[in-house]
Image (cartoon, rainbow, N blue to C red; front, side, top):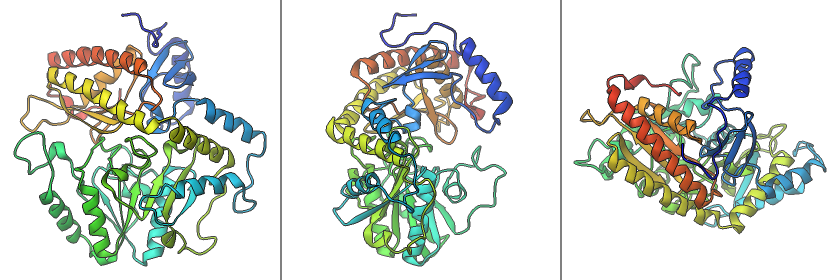
Length: 465
C-alpha cells in the first residue's frame, strides 16, 4: 500500500480492540442500532479520526453532516469548556440565559428575504420537524401535510410519517400519523420524460406533481408542504434549479406554508448558509440541526415572526431544548462559518470532488451519475448492463469496504443504498482531499473490477457492509 501523509493503518480493519468492543456492543446494544463502520473511535480532530487500535482514517462522513466545522474544532471546544464551567442547565423556560437569545438573534438575521423572523431551539432534527408541523397547523387552521417520495425527516412518529422510505425505518412500526400526503420529488437522473441523458426535469414534472397532489387532497386543506432543498438520505438528489421557486409559488397560490428542511443541506453545506438561497426562495419555516452546534444535540425552527407567534405561550417547549452548552457551541460554529470563509470552501470542495468523480465515471460505467450542490455531492452506482440502469447497492457496498480498508470512511444513501455521499468537514484541507480522492480512486478500481467479474444479477438486495 502506498505511503500516506494523513492515513495511518497499523492493523487490519477492524482491529483487535475495535473487534472486542463490537462484540460487547452486540451483547448489550440492540441490533436495531446498526453501525456503518466496524471502527471504534478514540480521538478525532478536523477530518482525521483515530480508532482504539491506533488506525487513523480520513473521515468523509462528517457525523452524517453534523461536523461542517470538523471534529473537535478548537473554537467550538473552547466555548463548550467555558460554558461547562458556568452552568449546564436551568431550562430556558424557567430561568432564561443570554446565549440562547443571542443565537436566536443571529439566526433570525439570516432568514431569507429580510422579513422579521423568530427562532426556537430543540434537541434534534426530528423535533424541529415535529414542531414546525405543529406551528404550521396552528397558524393555518388546516391539518394536511404534504411530503415527498424518498424524503427523510426523522424517526419520531410525525417525522417518520413524513419519511418516504419504509425499510428499515418504518417496517412493522405503524400506524402512522394521519393527514400526511406524499407526492413525487424531481429526480433528474431518473426523469421518466427525458429523451436522453443527462436527464433534465421541467414543467411536465411539476404538472405531474401538482396533479398527484390534487388526486389525494384538496390544497385548501393543506397546512404545509415540507421539502428538502436537496434530498439527503433519499440519495443526494438535486432538483432542477427552478423547482423550489415553482413549489414556493404553488404554496403561495393555495395559502400553504412552505417548510424547508435544511437539517442536512443547511449550515453552509451547499455553499450558501441555507440551500434554499440558491433559488432565491423564502420559506415560511426552516428546520436546521446537525451542524448547528458542531456535534452537540441542538436544532432550531426559524420562521416568519407572524407565523411563529401564533401558538399561545407555553404551547411549545421541552426540558432540555436550547441547552446552554450546545447553544454556546452553536455560537462558535456561526463564528467559524462567518469569519473563516467556509461557505466559499464548500463551493471549492464540491467542485474538486465532482471533478474527480466525473473522471472516475468516464472509466467506470457503474457510476451512473455524479451530482451535487456545493459540498453536498453524491455518486450513484448502477447496473450498466440493464437498459434502465437499475440501482447497484452491491457495488456501493464494495466501494465503501475497499475505501475503509485503505483508510477512508464513506457513507451510503438512497432508497436502495446505492449512492455514495460525501459529507466531509468544510475545513478539510486540499491536501487531505487529494489523499482521500486518490484512495477513493483505488477503492473504486478494486471494487468495480471485482463487481464486474462477479456479474450484476444479485445486486438488488444489497445491505450496508
